[in-house]
Each structure stands twice: as structure tokens, then as C-alpha cells.
Image (cartoon, rainbow, N blue to C red; front, side, top):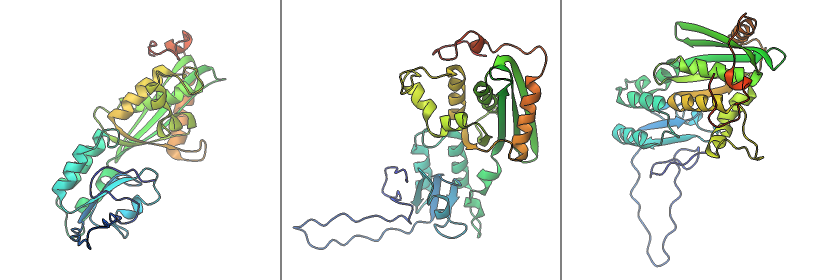
Length: 289
């Protein structure tokens, strides 16, 4: 399903900007509509590969990045100034701060004959790639988290643990530590083998819990509210795409994060997971770790 954003140039389907004409008034004669100006660029805000494109179709076009993508948001323009105004007008819920800045930078970059200046490549290549994992021995028990961050030639690894905690809390903590490491708004793709974490973000579960005072549909309070609060705030600061990956499937980054988490859980003299040990993980304002 394509998400529609108000405006005369919003594509109403994943086909090339097709607009259905309004029915003629029965008492009026034939209407002569002025031909629409040719669109010279397309902005993909939400799609397989967000960015700015000079063409609709073809290998370098925008169509392949929105067709079949759930909730795609895109729009065609005749002038860059119009595109920039539209990008600035979008709500942060639709267009996070980091992605907005990158799209505006792309719109201000003159395009060469090949149009590379308006491609999505710069945005994709600059994204931080994050692998996270976490777990607890015997669950609950001693637990650890592991993080691998990569951006171009840069590489960083992080890990930590607690003396008594749960699998889900360590999966959440891995994501929190990873995103807290980014000191300014970034665009990132985060890989996790935790369906609990990934679905909590991508399916909107955590936001709904927060919106309803952290109460779930069954009337019970959500678990790990202290960590979900922190993760949602970080996710709103950064432009993060959460992706689920199968654990122990040979993905190097995920395997390394798993190794870091396992090693951390076996360290001596681990600190307490205060909220968990005090039974405050499903209270609205618990003590944080």
C-alpha cells in the first residue's frame, strides 16, 4: 500500500504518477485540461532505497524502489525548489531528521550528465551498518549484549553485561547502546535476530504501547518499559531501518555480535540490572539500568 501525502503531484499508485481525472459536470461542456508539466525528478522518502532520482523507470529510476514496497512515500516534481519545500514540510513521523537532511543535501547537489548527483547512492553508502545481539544464560540469568558498528572503513565493537537479566532485555540493550554511540543524527540499518525487538519497532507495537500508557491490547502492562522508552527516543532521533536476520545463519556481523554478547555474559563481577532485580520493568517510570 502506498502512503499518500497531500499535494497535486503525489503518485496515487506505484505506477508513474497516474492521476484520475475528475468527472465532468453534467451541465458543462467538454473540459480542456492543461497538460501537466513533465516531472524532472522524483523524491523517494520511504522505499527500498530512499533518495532523489532523475527518472521514473529503468535501472537508475525511482519506480523500482517503491513498487511493491509497503507504505512507500514518494513524489515527482518539475523543479528542485518545489521538491525541497515538500521535503521540509513532511512530519518527522514520515521523514526522520537524518534522512531529511540527506535528501535536502542531494537536492542541492548539481547533477552531472549521468545524474549521479541526484542518485540515492550517497545516502546509502553513508549509512551506519549495525549488528546487535543479546542473551541471558538460562534466561533469566547472567546476560550480555554485543554490538558491531560499521561505516565505510570505520569499525567499532561494544559489549556489556548484567548479573541477572533476560534475553529480551539484552536484545533491547544492544540496540540502545549501539544508537547511543552515534553522537549526532545518523541514517543507519540495524540487523537483529530478535523478532521481539524488530517487530516491536517495525510493526509499531512499542509506539502503540506508549500511546496507551504502556498498556497492551490484553489490558496488561508491557514488559521492559524502561528500555523501550529509551529505544523509541533514539529511533526518533536517528533514521534507523530495523531488519530481522536469522540467528546463527553465518552472517559475519551477527555472528560477531553473538560472540561478544556470550563473552560479556560470562564476565566476573557483572553489575545489577536494577530495574529487573527490583521488578520495575513494567512500571511507567522505573529506575533505568
